[in-house]
Image (tube, rainbow, N blue to C red):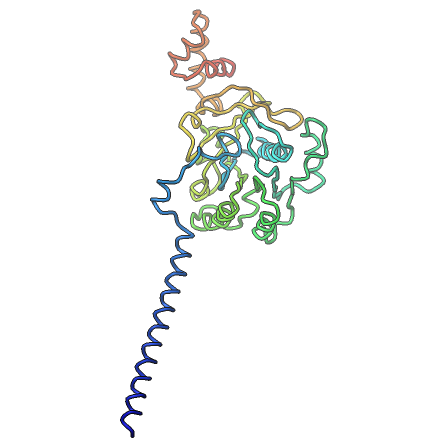
Length: 337
């Protein structure tokens, strides 16, 4: 074979090999670039976090309810949980600036309510009772879902179409069909909703029940039925507790709040539950340990407080001696005794 031809073939082979190596390297570089782009879209670097200007914690109901995430309201079956959350949804879409004494900051004036216990007719009657100003025309932004088949898909369709400020799920126990005490399964179930909340920057509230006889205990995140996995997944857990003696009074207790100062987590926010199924803030706060059913320790403190009152001591003096933070706690103790 002609030497020049052999040399030309050798050069062509070398060029082809080099071209293939270059193409392979380019493919590797593109794949690496794709992976890096995908990775950095999912994370935040420390430098970004340190140089970015953050505002105060963004809230829907200031300062209690965050703008985003999954939270829970728990309580006994007669506490008014559904009425409280339905009232919140109605306040959001009606454009009210406050609810139960806290500033309300909706972005969209839209809410989605997943109902597993009530039908359309019963909820219509309940909402008519709760409407305060008689205006029936300002609730178009409140959407109810009664068919819970393919619920995640339904919620995401709603979020893609018209992002709500809040999605209320009433109730957790009707949707989660697995064993309540299996942490991994409970967390896996809740994680799907948590991902939706983050993806669409909205809040999802789960309504859940407390265990039997927990009213003999102080309000606690551990009172919710089921596993520790439920409360552990929540950014915030609230317990709505009926007053042991005043039948029109409810106590909203923050039993877990990752970003709330400690003063929010020891005393309840006292609410009046009206015949029209609305809640009104009384402005009073009551220590959690006074909300359990009557017990000997509280009875003894009540008797001591009455005796001190008869001696002419002021409510503030009694509060200081008994170790309470406010005179309203002493007032509640005297009324309960």
